Amino acid sequence: MTNLLVKLFIKDYENVSEPSVRSSYGKFSGKVGIFCNMLLFALKAFIGTITHSVSITADAVNNLSDAASSVISLIGFKMAEKPADKEHPYGHARFEYLSGLTVAVLIIIIGFELFKTSIEKIIHPSEVSFNIIVVIILIVSILVKLWMAFFNKSLGKKINSTTLEATAADSRNDVITTSAVLIASIISHFSGIELDGIIGLAVAVFILYSGIGLIKDTLSPLLGKAPDPEFVNYIQKKIMSYDGVLGTHDLMIHDYGPGRQFASVHVEMAAEDDVLKSHDILDNIEHDFLEHDNLNLIIHYDPIVTKDDMVNNLRGWLNEQVKTIDPGLSIHDLRVIPGPTHTNLIFDCVIPYNLIASPSEIQRRITNIVQSKYKNYFCVITFDASYAAMPHTNNENENPD
Image (cartoon, rainbow, N blue to C red):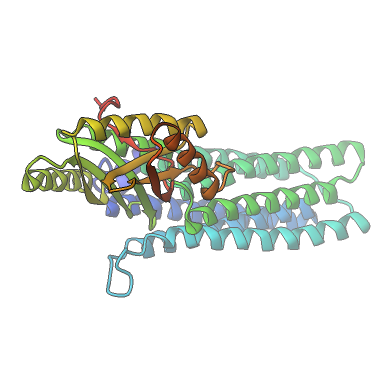
């Protein structure tokens, strides 16, 4: 059914890499969410009022919050598709993250209100009316929410949207909470044990937990979370597949929202090759990523000497030696500057985030290793952070298919 709805309501639905199509998926999900949740809210609010059930009413309020969430998501996708302008040269795609954050805050507020209401119900319990209509309404709610969970999960996977996948998880959670309400109503009716307030409290805790989790998920990309390792590896292998590329390092990826990613990387090429030819290859790489991956990639050209055996051997030896300190260490941009009394080894060293040792300690240990073999060699080291968890790579790495 999901595929049929997508074909009917989303134009050019197969071209999910196109920002406008991606936005259409998000807005369609929002409209479906508004319709379904408002329908469930009206049904549950009516039943909860006539049966005096706080847990059913609480579940209705949860559906209302879900409808509000769908409205905010709809606005977020609409704002995110706005083109870049003078004030926002990287576009507005982060509106999708901001809408998710707003939804999370709304969920937590509603959770707190429900928590207070449920506590009052536990302290001052009242009899809950029960009839077959209640059972039917709750079963219908469970079935609708189950379908919405599969619906949003499917759309989320199609366009790689954490917002839609979070919406799917929220619908799945609603299935669990509504099932709990149904079970509590049946038990209370046949046993006389009042579980309404307790179940309402459990639903409130569950809503609060979901809201906190959603805040973490939406804040992470806004704060600058690390890029997906698979995506980093893909970029690395694709660059290395080009003729003339000898190595890569210093990859940085900036996420300005879904479909709005920018990156920069240093690419090593032989210093002896024609500069214009090397520059043309790098231009082709940039255009390739933009056309096929919608990634704005800026490449810094790093020429390296390849016909000096002494420098080549020293570079390979030094890379092996720094890994004895920590396997995550790597060096690049090695230059050998001889002088009358000593020789300077000038290079950059990439430090992984999980390394406990300080840069000064690493410099001391590298210097000791170098001077144990080359007494008159001094190390001049610039330390780089591994922003994309991508070590220095060279042309010995396996190229992509």
